Amino acid sequence: MPMSERVCLGLSAAGFHRIAYTQWGREDAPRTVLCAHGLTRNGRDFDRLALDLAAHARVACPDVVGRGRSDWLANPALYGYPQYLADMTALIARLDVAEVDWVGTSMGGLIGLLLAAQPNTPIRRLVLNDVGPFVAKAGLERIADYVGKDPVFEDLAAVEAYLRFVLMGFGALGDEWWRHMAETSARRLPDGRFGLAYDPGIGKAFSAQPIGDVDLWAVWDRVRCPVLVLRGAESDILLADTAADMARRGPGATVVEVQGVGHAPSLMVEEQIATVRAFLLER
Image 1 (cartoon, rainbow, N blue to C red):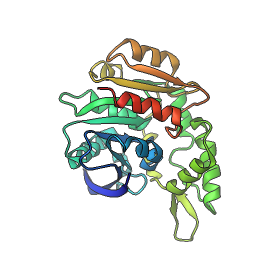
Image 2: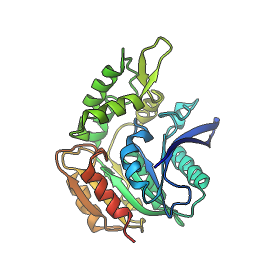
Image 3: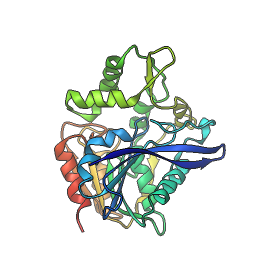
C-alpha cells in the first residue's frame, strides 16, 4: 500500500507549527487508524504495523510536535498533553472522519486515553501499548535519565548502537528494524554528523515538575470504548497489578502480556501486529 508524507497545522501560544505525519492506505478506506508514538520517538516506528493495517484501513502516523519531521516549539514549556491533545484533534479534523481507532505507545497511549475519556470522543477502539492510568515513579525516573539529552554521533551505526541500548525494552528485533529506527530517528547536523530527531527541550518540560507517580484512574473510569492493552512482561511503566486492574474496572480492557519485552512492545513483530489487527477488525 502506498505511503505518503503529509503535513497539517497545529496552534500553540507561540503561533502555528507544522505537524508531520505519514499516511498509508486508501483515502476511501472504511476506517481510519491513528498511531501515536512514545516520548522521544516518531511516527515511523509504526511503518511495519501501518503497512499491515493498510490492507483494511487508512493509517495516519504523526510525529508529535518536537519530534521527527514536525516543527519544534519556540517555548519548550509548551510541550505537554494539552498541546498534544489539541494537535491530535487538529489532525483528526484534517483526516475528515467522524471516528478513528487509536494505537498509542507510552506517551501516545496516554494521549489516546485522555481523548477517549472526553464526551463525544471520536475514538472508536483504543489500543494502549505498555501504558495505563497509573505510572510508577521508578519507571519515569529511568526515562528522565536519557530524555532531553542531545548526543552527537559520527555515523548511523553509532545512532543504532545508542538506540539498541536505550530501547532495549523493545525486545528481540531483526537488524533491519534497528537500522530502520536509526535512519528515521536521526537528523543530519551542519557538520555532517548526526543528532536525534527530537527537540532536547522536551526533556526540560518533562523534568520541570518533580517526578512522582501518575494517577489517571478517574480518567480511565470515563472511557467507554473497547480497549486492548499490550503489556511488556518486564515493563517498569505498566505494572502487572495496574494491567490487572484495567481489566477489572472502567471499560474492562482485554490485556495481552508480551513475553521477553519490557517497555514497550515494538509493534514490529508479527505476533504483536496480529494481536492489534484482530482487535481493530472486530465489529
